[in-house]
Length: 457
Image (cartoon, rainbow, N blue to C red; front, side):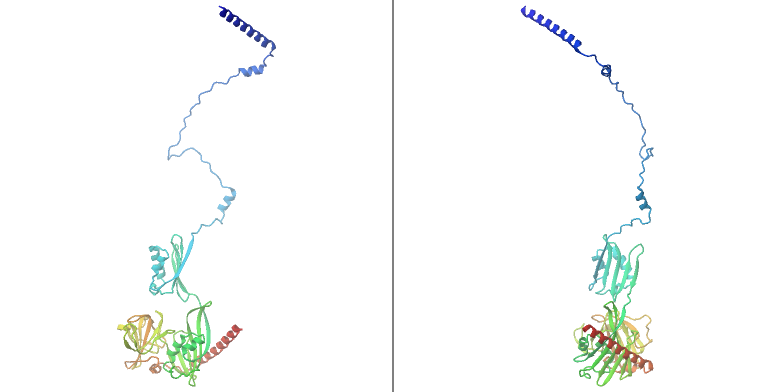
């Protein structure tokens, strides 16, 4: 009862307080501005459902209507592209490979070492072989190869000696050419005093010692170098060399020789033609005309008994041997007639010349003979009748040269029969050649002495 009366009184009091507050707020507040009232009355419009629009796209492989924008190059780039000075195509990187051919090697083996494929090697061999017989490859020849990094050959050069090169270029159309440089021919002179031997005198005078062989061939039938020379004899030589820059090409060639022996003056004049034919003079008179069988060769074996280089027993050597490179020309030593061309057992390929009724010369171990050379044909001294080879029983390239008198071998370096078979030249032309050679010798010696004096200073 008391609790109910209390609650009712509290409720009445609360209502009376709320009414008083409401009246107090109304009496004390300012009126609301119209703009604020309008803003408070605003509400956003209802959201609309988006409308779906169907669009037909082109299927694969059919043209569409979409336009692809085209970008135009900048003016400067357009000018570069339109100009004639466009940037060149980038060439592949090239490498150079070179080395000499070793004994027993083939071109294919060398190119395989260089990294060329089999088909490329075959192409190179065909190109080089078009200008050079690859069977003539020798140690010392060299190969130079220019190729790309993937092994494609651009050029191949084969140097075969004396500055001669066979060059093959591989491009759209492969081409092969032979490059032969033009060497300078220089004339040199020297003077020596013979002491113990001719070889030693030439070496001491700084002249090619191989000239001793040429002198022995030319004067062997007239002068006995062992008995007739007592020491102190004076020798003068004039020779020619082919040079490329400071490098000598090939072997030097004798042009003139003068040797005093026993009070007699022996002089030899070689022609400029390179035929090997020379004229021998004694005290200014023509003695005979002689042609060396192999010009510039080395006398490797003399006439007489010797130990055979192949069979090992002691046998009679019926001629003399001249060691020379395969393919070196072989010349007739005197005018005659071809009596035989063919094969003779251990002699190999042979050419035999008859000089009158009782004298014959034989040239053996030849690699080849001229196609135009036939049996019965007449030849002159110095004519080429074959090339040095190693046919028959031979240990290497050389010429076996024999002189037979009435069928019996004689020493080619001492027999006088060929001198009578050789045509003598007693006309004014031979004497004028001797005078010209003497004048050139004197002028060249004066020049050499002047150069040596200048160098020593």
